[in-house]
Length: 170
Image (cartoon, helix red, strand yellow):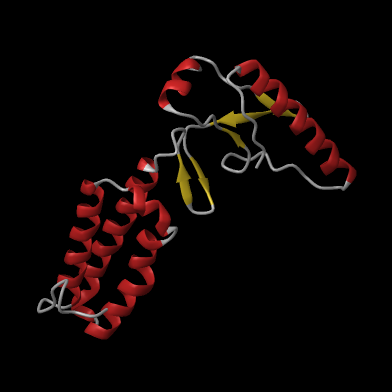
C-alpha cells in the first residue's frame, strides 16, 4: 500500500506518481510484475467528509508504464471493505448481507442435519464473518448491533427452537 497526505490534490498526485515510478523501477529491476488488475491496484482518497468535499469533482489520475490505475470508492483489503470516510458502513452492509445469506442456507438444510452439525456450521461458517476484525464492531451504531443480535437470535432458533440467546451454549 502506498499512501500520502496533503490538502492539495496536485501534491497528492505528484507524490503518488513519484512513488509509483520508483516502485515500478524496483519491480522491473527485480524482474517482478506490477499487477494492475482491478481490485489489486486501485486509487482511493481517504478523509473526513469535509476534506473529501474539498476534492469533490477532482480525481487522482495515476498510471504505471502507461497503464491507468482505476479509482474506487470501496476497496477490500485483508477482508475489510474500506470506504473513503473509514466509517466501516460499507463493510457492515456487506458482511451483514453475507451472514443473512448463510443463515438462510442453514435454515434450508436444517431439517437434514442434527443439532450438533447445525451448531458447528454456525460456529465455523457464519459467526466468523461478523467477528473477524472485531475491533471494527466497537464503532457500530446501536441499530447495527441490534441487527447482529437479531440474526444471532434467528440462527439460534434455527439450530434449536428450544434455544434462546441466554440459555443455549454454542
